[in-house]
Image 1 (cartoon, rainbow over the protein chains, first blue to last red):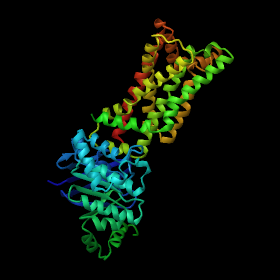
Image 2 (image 1 turned 180 degrees about the vertical axis):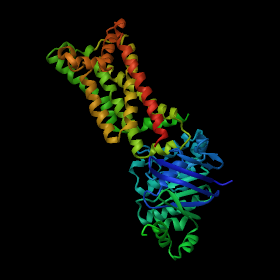
Image 3 (image 1 turned 30 degrees about the horizontal axis):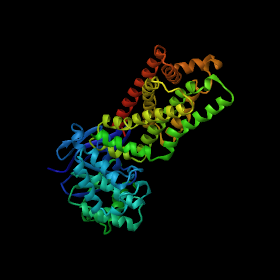
Image 4 (image 1 turned 90 degrees about the vertical axis):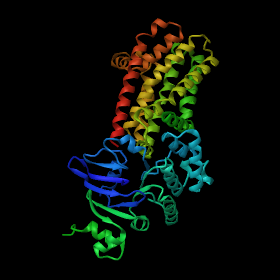
Length: 243
Length: 243
């Protein structure tokens, strides 16, 4: 069984086709990236898969559960780290983790053990008693990802996890993502092409709401006859625009 | 369980905001003290401590709208709410989570207000207990308004409307600062079409031990409270489905 099976999914807002008849599959344990220029439909596709919006047509199965028919069951399989850091500002780092464990229905004992485990794994012990609003951008992102995986999700969505971070903080987060690779299927959206190139098993490129290309970084370079992934991406998203 | 975890988080967010505590507890007490001093220097029946206390208590409760509206609007802005919408939490978990912390706060506000009034010369009688219980019904109006404003407006607009407009309207139209009969006309009619003056008159009647006079005010207050809460719950439910 695939982790994600997207079946001809569409989302229309009036005349605008934000996501248009997209079909793709992601195997369990894969790390895939969704790429596209602004307005390509990445966020809408993530919002559909995480149950924040419902599709106009089509469906998607997460570990065999339909996002249309079983949205509640699907939600228990997911972890989401949104584009904005999405943390509770007046709670400490530990309290934020405990909040997420609690809303996923963990009892007190499991909440404590999972919180301790993530504080250790994400090197958060120096800031665990600090209110999250006082953290730097890099620490907030790190906490945000820890909050997303505390529920032991089968599928983890990381929406622009390194947006706005300096190069050192980004590289540190890459290490964090590498560390959790394999524990869950990971869907990453990013504007940083080198990030997708470095981290992904496969890459999906969206354009105007449609799936434009899919494959490994090497396959996409081969397909476009380029040697750099950035050139391959530009060729794919610009294809037909200049004509 | 999930609702209680979320309620605990919301309680911490509110009580760790010093401005909320000042406006919720300190400000009404300061007003009560100042107006009592004025009454001592220039005695006016409207500002006698037994007439003033129910009005100030209702005014204090209006800050509950500010607490909840600000918190919900901020949760929407920071995408914490979006993150939580991707968890197995239900609409009822959210509503209870946002509402439950405000109930003990409403009780605390009323108790602090009456304790201060007793220090300022209010006669300590058993009628204070039913008066505080009736003020609990009044709190439903402000909790409902807070949910409604926080779910629909931006953080800035929610703060302006619930913090400035609503508290002022509640003050002017409740007959606490001046006798509505002295203004008369459309102003008086509008005031009596809204619940604030009914809340104050109900409180005055209960405090005086004239329980038959709490009607029809209790009906108006409870009616507004139930309708506002129902609208807020429906709207929140809709918002959950259309991020």
